[in-house]
Length: 277
Length: 172
Image 1 (cartoon, each protein chain N blue to C red):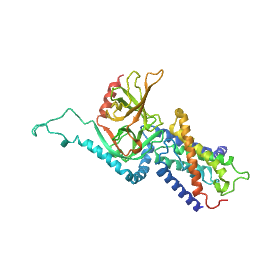
Image 2 (image 1 turned 180 degrees about the horizontal axis):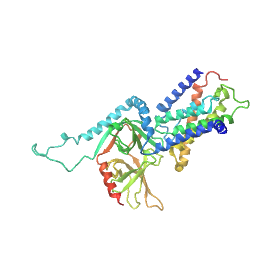
Image 3 (image 1 turned 45 degrees about the vertical axis):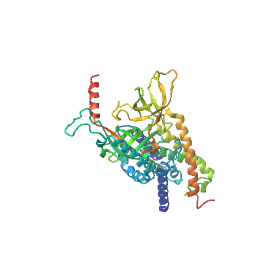
Image 4 (image 1 turned 180 degrees about the vertical axis):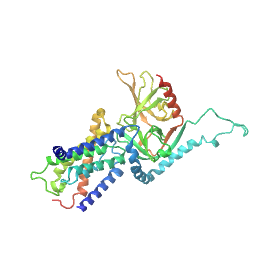
């Protein structure tokens, strides 16, 4: 027993190092876990508050440009307002439109911390669980896809940016309807990779890549980017395609979180259908 | 003693603010990420007990991680830095050993000693940090390149900071 105490005293430096290092690695590994990120839940409210204050301060610098962009978007949305539509029928006719049902709602949020230089980039926004933001929801900006919500605390949420080496988004080429998946190589903040497009398809530079709507994170048709270059891989059956990102992550300030109203229904039927396999 | 602790707290606050609100906000060519805050760990007193240095490293790494949404990453690298610092200090000790109250600064041991001391520890910290971030060896060379470039940049910042802020009174 005395020897043991002596041993611990002798190697206390090494022991403390190993214990603390193991704890750090536990945080590192569980923090990389998509689903439940206790660390951000715990600390998000503290650091989020400070970062938000800082963001509010620096926000003024780019205010002009941001206002223009929001105004443009408002103008675009105005065309769908009731007063922009011409009335074709007289007042007395009531039309119950059952052709369309609302599937997606959008929650506007502001970016308060963002990076593009890491291999795994995350974005912190100023809305959280209180505003209905849950993990796995899609995030878009007025330019296109931004990422997917990783975790949310009461007032803040962390988004896995498209610029994250493990992010994956289902996409299709608008001009010919072929489906593939989008990922990031980690090198260039302006370029994504489009995978799984078979090499017999004919492609052209500038073709539009949009979300496929296969997952409930994004509606179909949100822009991701345009084809920058493509080449056939030798001995492979797929193209190697570089995609120019439509979102400028360096200027990201206002984002919208996509809420799929039919998500539960969708998951339920998939579960039922695959239950007896 | 209390004065010295107060000085360390002020210097930590300053380095922390610069790290979070200046260095982390600027994107350097997409490839380079300086971590000036490690200077605080480099400048801890030489005769500080190892366990205390480890706890300080743990605390500082956690605080930085909180503000960069990278749980465990900086913490782990800081612990490795302090751990190797203990052995490096023995390795590069002057022939007559350290005197009490000496700080690992150029004003005590000269610029060449400080350059070797700081660049080795910064390199260890950065290599560990960048691999901990990616967490596998798939991007071995690009990660190494990022670590090396960032090390050079951090080292330059450290030398400048020490030259202007930590080199005042006792210079020989």
